[in-house]
Image (cartoon, rainbow, N blue to C red; front, side, top):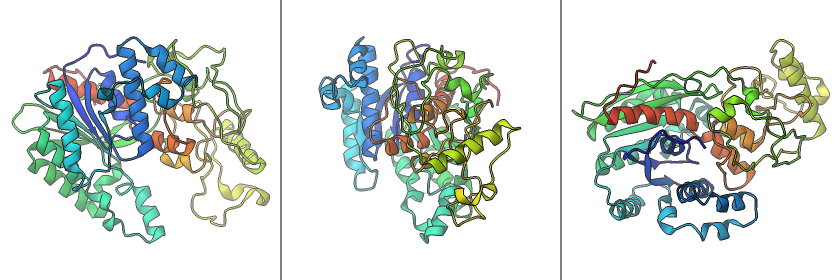
Length: 429
């Protein structure tokens, strides 16, 4: 686990927290969490487990955490040993006008118990499907008017938290499609609303690869600060790595479809994995298990990898032999089989669709001819190996695909911290 350079006195509340990618980055940067609010029960359990990890780490009792990861004790036995004051900070609740009073009450209780006088930062981003270009495309196929999706207006609930707690700054993360949703109307209304509750705001597109993540992942990052506070949008420090995506996999056991092996290989971890804190000497490997694949998919996967190894060519679905084709649609999604670009400095964006099938995320090793595991997807997203995702494999993939990469979040948090402490980041855009 990458340790923060120093523990700051700054705190944060995480809304629409998901599995905690944003929270993890702020924790690594030295911020202290007040509450995480998340509606999905499995993501909330993941947040509880991560909160337990930090509690045990701070009390020098990670041996208990390792017992849990090694399945020597079950989750109930594990969580019984974690104080309620720790787990209470995770609020498993769907945010709505009806639930807001009870959520506020719980957060107010934590604030009072800890003697917190001011809130420094609120972070989070409402579920992005309603704003995303992919989500809109799916909506048009399913006949559901995107303008009727209530998720379009969750930013107003975010604004209610800003109005009540008046944090010095906030970070609102979302997909790039938010600017054009409903012809730009939502984007304009969102900006007006955030300004109306007392904030100056600025929005810039950020890419995870500029924060040292080995992934091309573009996101809109809105930063707001109290009017007349003298604060501003940070110039985040640009961090480029000379590593390639394969460096994420070298110390993981080689697997075939349907296999599982939670023992690190004898190959030394890459410098990238150790320097970023993705793997430490004390880690226990988990979630290194593969989906099973039928013979037809394996043959297609091998063809995809062969083409990539032959000058980085991509598979066009229509070029497959007829006996390997099962989809009637031959005009769209012709790139439905895609390799994770192991020999490049970054790969394509990890998506929650990984929960449906692994065809778009094929492992680059032709001898393994399979899709990536949960742990491999987590590493691509820069989650530490100590990060355990609760729920089924399907839920774990959704949590990872929807997350903000922790390394990206840490870079954002460091920029925010520099603003709050009046420091110059000496960064570059």
